[in-house]
Each structure stands twice: as C-alpha cells, then as structure tokens.
Amino acid sequence: MKFLLMMNTPRGGEYQIMSWPKQDIEAHIAFMMSFAGKLRAAGELVSAEGLAPPSQAKRVRAGEDGRPITDGVFPEAKEFLAGYWIVDVSSLQRACEIAAEASAAPGVGGKQLNMPIEVREVMSAPPNLK
Amino acid sequence: MTFRSPGPDFEHLLRELAPQVLGAVMRRYRDFAASEDAVQESLIAAAKQWARDGIPSSPRGWLIQVALRRMTDHVRSEISRRNREFELAQELPVVVAPVMYSEPEMDPEDALVLLFMCCHPALTPTSAIALTLRAVGGLTTGEVAKAFLVPEATMAQRISRAKQSVKVSQVPFSLPEAPERAQRLGSVMHVLYLIFNEGYTASSGDALNRTDLSGEAIRLTRLLHSLLPSDPEVMGMLALMLLTEARRTARTGPSGELIPLDEQDRSLWDRHLITEGIALVTKAMAHGAVGEYQLQAAIAAVHDEALDVQTTDWPQILALYSVLNRMSDNPMVALNHAVATSMVHGPCAGLALLEPLERDERLSGTHRLDAVRAHLLERAQDWDAAIASYLAAAEKTTNLPERTYLMMRAAHLRDQER
Image (cartoon, rainbow over all chains, first blue to last red; front, top):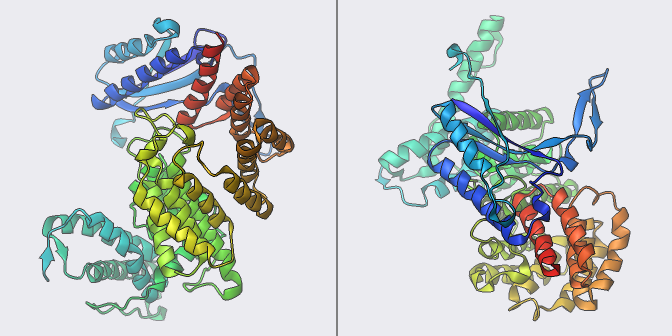
C-alpha cells in the first residue's frame, strides 16, 4: 500500500526555518536526512521531495484558447505544502507511525515541532493493469 | 572466438565503443533512429552476454555484427509491414542483408559526425543532451533517466522525439561544411558543457544514486579533443572541466552541504587533474586565439594553484574577468567580475558594479545576484542587509544544498548579532 505523507506548514506558524538559529537548522536537516535514509534502507521509501518556497508557486488555468493563464503569488493562502514523502508499507498503521516520526522533527531549541502530517492513501491501479 | 574475462573496465569499454559501432551501422543504413536503437540493443545484449562468457576478442566487431543483425530484422519487418499494408511487394526495392564481417572498417570521424548530429541546433538543449548521452555516450535510457531523475518511460519518449527531429530536419551523416562548422562546434561544446554543469550542480533534488554526468561530460570532451586535437577552445573547455572537477570532493560536506571555495580543504583537491588542466590551458592559450572557455579555464587554474583565498592572485583573476566581460554578454560573467573586483578593490567597489545588474532581466528570478550581494554586504559588515540578501537568495534557489547553505549563512550572521 502506498501512502502520500504531506507536510503542510501554516504560514507564519512554527515552521519558519529561515529565522531559526544555525544549530537548530542543522539539527533539523540532519534529522530529515537520517529519517529519509532510514526509510530508504528499510525499503519503505518510494520518493521524498522538498518543495521550493511558495513565493515561487504559480496557479495555472487554461484560457478559452487553451493557453495558460497564470496567477502569481498567493499571500492569502493559510498553509502550503513544504514537502512530501511517498511510502510503500503494509498497513495504514505503519504509515501513521512514519508520519508521527516525521511530525516529531526538532525545531527551535531542539523542541519537537509536532507538526501535522496529512496521510493519504495512493489509489492502486485496477487489477488488470498490474 | 577467444574470450577474456570481463574486468572492471567492462562498461567503460562498451561506452567507448558505442559511437564507433553506431557510426559503422549508420554508414550502411543511413537511418539514424533505427540504427541507434539497434546499437542500444547490441550494447544491452553485450552487457548480459559478456558478463557471463567474457569479452570477445574483437568486441567492436561483435557489437557491429549484433547491431547489423538487428537492423536486418528491423528492415525485414518493415518490409513485411509495408507488404501487408500495400500488397505491393513487387514494387518495393530489394534490400540486401549486410554480409557479416569480422574486421569492420573504422572511421575515427564517425564519433565527431555523431556529436554534430546529436547536438544539432534544431534540437532543444534537453533533447540534445539526452540523445548525446545515449547515442555517443553509450548510456542506456535507464541511466540517462536516472541522471535527470525522471521516469525511464519519460526519457525514452524524449529520446525518440529527439531522433524524430533529427530525421525530420534531414541532417546528413557527414561533417558540416567549413562555414557552418565553427557554429555547429559551438553547439556541440555548449551541450557537453551543460551536461558537465548538470552533474556539477545537480539542478534539482539530492545527489544520491545519480549517474555521474560530470564524468560522462569529461569523457565525451576528451573524445572531442582527441578528434580535434588542435582546437584551442575544445582544449580550453576540457581544461575548465578538469580544473573544476578537481575540487569536487572538497566542494561538499558529509551530508551534501555546499562548502564555498574559501572554506574548502584544498588538500582534497585532485592534483593530477589540476596538473593536466593547467597544461592544457597553457597550451591552448599559446595558440593565440583566446576564447571564453580558455579564459574560464585560466581563472580556474589561478584558483587551483593558490594555497588559500588570501594568497590567491586576485589581480590576475580580475584581469582575466575583465577580458572575459568585454568578450561576452553573459550576466553571470559580470557577476563574477564584480566579485573579483571586490577581492582587489574592496566590497564597496564590487557592490557598485552590481547596481546596473539589478535591472538585468536575465538575472531577475535567479538567486545569483542576491547571493553575491549578500556575500559582499557581509564583507562590508552590513549585517542586516547581508541577512536580508541571503534570505532572498534562499527563497529563490531551487537547489537544496544551495538553499541550506544560504539559510545557514543568514543564521550564522543572526546568531552573531544576538
């Protein structure tokens, strides 16, 4: 079973890594790297990506002629996706355990962030396509 | 046939032979797309069979025979397909199956022709890069896909579309004529340099498990240099790659973080590559026609010769950047010129040179200008402005190690202020 684990961080919330002290940033990055390394070693990691900041995000819609109509930055957004993991595990319970571990990443002063991680199951292909 | 057991250079051998085999097949069939597929299949077959049975006495002949056999199969099935479609078998040209030969002729220019073909200006840079790596570099589609972190099916499509473009634009299988040649060589070098840079900076994601693109670019540039041994710009580009590659190990820390030039442990720099690079650039510049790659290589050589940042010959670097800046209209060169100026005349002189660049649209949206400004402001001890510029740069870069580095730099200054 595949699950998408989304790290949604609220704007102006606790996850403002750019303003943290240096050693806290280092500790956080080290945690995230060893976390991904552990999942990879266990054969549970499908992919993990961190996303560029929302200041670079675009919202695109097709115009009448099919060409892209692009909106720029969205200052109104309350939260944004900072990154995600896709894991391949045997149960929802295991996916939740992994999510909890990510949630406990260290923040300022090494204190656990306990940030919310959204867990969504990835739909599987119909049996005849497998 | 006699066989010897496959050594560690096994894959290297296959890659080296790939363009030679493709050249031989193309001279018979002229169909680039189908020949390239046939060669790719022969390489895959070799990888399997040679690993089991050992390397045949004439590896190149073996590969050519297998590829030609695949081509014959391909032509036969094409004919029967057409026969089924049109039922006009009698009007179709008779295709003679190639005779088997064990000592196929070899034209060293084949690889050069292939390079010109794969880097044809009709192709987008991404297509040219993918096609070059597969057709000349002998990488499998899977390996090319891994290098760019895209699914294999996506890369297969990209390569087949690129081959289609080559077919449609009717690029002849021959070297371009003299007037066109210099320009086309420029395209080839540009593609090789892009491959090198992609490997060096890895424009997205983490570096783990990626195909070594810098190594591939160097290998292909060595090939180009061996085919055009007296071209000073090719020499210059190879030198630039070697002198840059020499610092690779020192450039990143244990967890992939970037280490800037002034903080690198220079004992980790590869002396062999530096010696070779310096010899090449010296030889190139003695030719007289000084080009951009040679100047970049000369600058890299000055850095690589210095024991540390303090003893670096900055006036010479500044002089080289001044020539380069006059020669090219590249805003990145102008940025580096500003940095060199600051090293000789102080950070304020460098900052003054950044002002006209603030209006350069080619730099807007990239993090480079903010990053350089941040460094110069830091050296001018304008902490708050430096922190703001570091963070602006961190917001804009899409390279993970680079973002971490910029963020850390800002955090470091903030910590000192506290």
